[in-house]
Length: 594
Picture 1 (cartoon, rainbow, N blue to C red):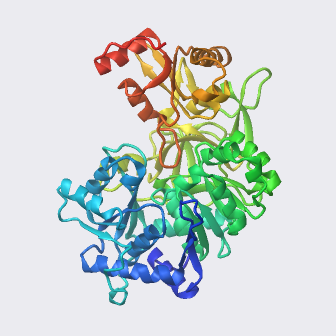
Picture 2: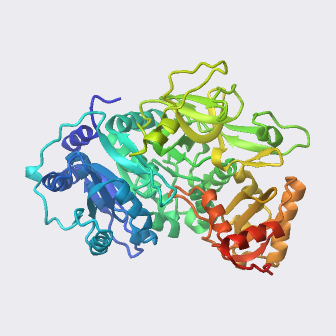
């Protein structure tokens, strides 16, 4: 921990100390050679004071302030301005950039009881119209890129303590019932210290990132952590990365970045899309920490990326599998520096029964990647039903305690008792003191390593077996190259029995035969190799599978869309009972797809 009581104090000190040194370099999206946008510590301090003075003058100190920006330095100035003012920042996706209109942010606006919205001048007219349409005439709207507001000299440092809220982190999920994690200055400082210990960061760290700034990994890992250690970051928008993934990797050679990361799909995209010619231009020898925070981390992803980019100097020990969530501010565990990720090969059938037994002759296996070791938390693996602690090497729900764990969700007292104040029982009627966070994730502890195996609510209990949907999805994608370049979602629906549903993206141009044959191949694999009677395969266009902002498959949402008949299949084969429940839900008569 630092000697600072709040993150605001820390940033004020960093600005005074580092002055004209670069804090952030933002790379514009266009491919026309636009110059990088530099933001020094002193420049950030000046703009943050201007924004903070306006917030203080307009009664937003101590109140929630919604931030709606495209990726760029303007967001960073606004977030820092909220810290300076003692306001509670509420980062959210810019609707016009995400193509979601205002559905999600309307829920956040009302739930967070927002006093003001900060944005840029390009977005301000539409946001002002939205506020008026929502009847929020008392909510102020300010475009912070004009400079025609506020007085840096009028700014006053707020009287804040560790327990004051720094920001609300709204989690990915339902648009109708958004939940804002209450992150205090104490939580934020504690987690930044945990990240520094786990990843070995320092003032010489330069981050290279593309993750959304409103997402916890992008915000805390790539924006706030450079400020915490007094380092710098070279950033770009998610769209820029998705269009040209080589731009991200070039940051590590051309701009001297040495730390940065993302979920599995980012590494998979680079492996798949970057050509040999582009590879020859990369220098990844200085990349010291390549974070992978997906749940769970894929061994195949680590192996394929390491092999593909070894000629560019990438070292396997640079990979940093880690685990965390918004409810713990960010990081819970991470792989020790300069050590290759630990991979545990287990018998698939044993894993279905909740144990990490080794391979058996003739049996299928699963490769589990450790999410590292736990240093700044207390972690237990608990049976979610009995609430008894599970033995080492067996699977249960991951429960967490520590200074980084938030106090709960904004205005959700009943949910907070259930999720943030859980008690472990000894099985004899006794309980511990409580205060455990139920993460909703499944995993096991073994030899000091934390292995995350899946999500509790997404676990498929099928014919007495515990199936992890990501295992089935990977198996499906391995059947044909036309499936391997897309995403999939596996879930169950119930009639008089459970039915497994496979929804898988397919790129038609890559199909060697017909779609019927592709679907039949999926059914054959599931039936013969996994012993799963799967009569339900839905092939869809790329981009159909819904994901969170961090790239996680939203299987619960995909199940809902399937049952509502909201998916448009390229080809589907459904059991009659499944077809009937979809038809009943939509009030339509669904003919079999051909």
